Image (tube, rainbow, N blue to C red; front, side, top):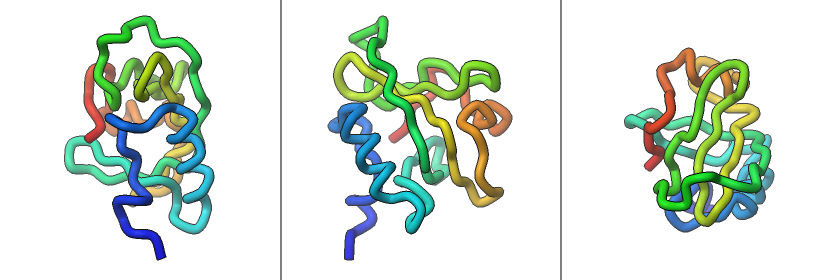
Length: 111
């Protein structure tokens, strides 16, 4: 049986491809791969890899943008990011862009 840390995204160490594989492995039985921001634990159930990030100095796990129209894009290790397509919260399943309604915004950091 996997341990909690094996089901949680390690933003500092994981590439976008590794995050994508973990998310796919954890969906649907675990309601996605775990991620924490501002002491709020969510499950990320579907992502899309974004190939190029303009700021290579940005720390992995930093939200690049988060709004309803463009979705929620988070920096991964290297020069890539992931767009959160579907997210599970205790309130239910939402599109990644809806995370802006919960207060997520550019510059915030996943731990």
